[in-house]
Image 1: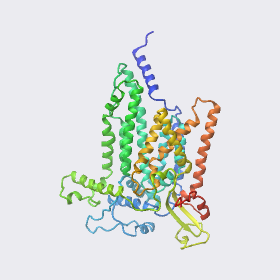
Image 2 (image 1 turned 120 degrees about the horizontal axis):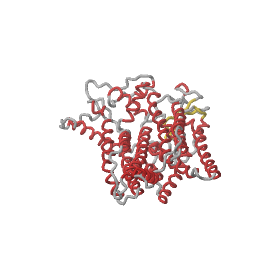
Image 3 (image 1 turned 90 degrees about the vertical axis):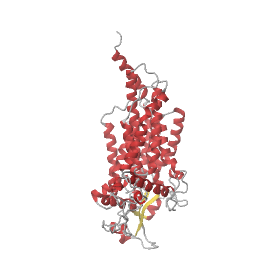
Length: 534
């Protein structure tokens, strides 16, 4: 019996889908329940004792105050000189009086999104350590869920997805920054979310391409256009939020834009189209909208508080220089503000005892002490501070922004393997992971004299974990492998995850600000050459 036209189309669709994308795991409930359990574990670690230390930690001295100012005045205002003391004493009026002039605007060099999120926590819980760290803990926990689901889609394995989320929950750097009211955890979250969106877009676009080609069997040229793709729009929104948190996220716009074009070329080539490059570039017509216009619009919208007030720093620059055109004048003032801030940021050369260079970051030779205090006993508080040159039985409390060594040192081997695997096998997953690291890491190398810190590496840390998980997947072996092969692989993978868990448990005291005897604190300082970890 001859096949009906509908049967022919269905068979063509099945063949094309099998060729273009492997199916997702058919594990139903566990596809969400497993990641949610891992996220709950990570969230408990991050919210437990979140208010400790009861002090202003590292750059919280800027962002906690800026967020409180935005919450009450729409923009950052100048602070009184003893603002830190007033905050810790429970006072919330920490701003210089305006005296009827628009001179209260403070000069700041970071965009608004991260500070707006910190302000939400302060609105809910007040100007206190829990309040200004709340949003960081929320986004640090949600990043674990994102990691589980993204790794699951990348590897087509719920088990490997949960392992990826567990590694993130047990990484010291992500843990510390999830418990500190500064911007980097939000930057990492938005970059990871944007990557998740382009990853979903890859699968959705391939399914749509297969369906259209199956319905048009004679199309062997450049193939159909897929139009505006909603997951690319979502990626553009997250990239706009990332740039609105820290400007260096702009390199991910370039990286992910190029990645989507490369994936489209690969999809059309795999589908058997002859003009696959031409077809991919024709379909990229909407990329400037999704990856330039949308992020730019989101970014400008994040400055709405500054645009709506008259007290922001440089807010009236255009009017003072003779430009009085509605809409244009505020945008011109915003441009001038950005010009000054970017010049300052690129040229920042103030020496800092904890600064480091990007080639030090994976080795973790110079982590950052966010907080350190010596006490005469096991109880924290000003009444127990060590006096000058105290030589008795000392106790230490520290928050050290350092990664879990088994993850960061292991990632160096994993990255090299992924790079080689991509060169040899053209595995798109390995290439995407390596590109994610390069986009966040490489731009810092030319800025040799610029003041930099290890925790800047959090931006690309998810891609380090993904490189490890890809390697763990190869060690574990395919589902169809023999029982002996899978058992050996599972033993190696389990031993590595256990090693990460034990290292995190060992370093927990100096990550979470616990008060411990000085000799015990010193035993955690593994690297003491030069400045090292101390």
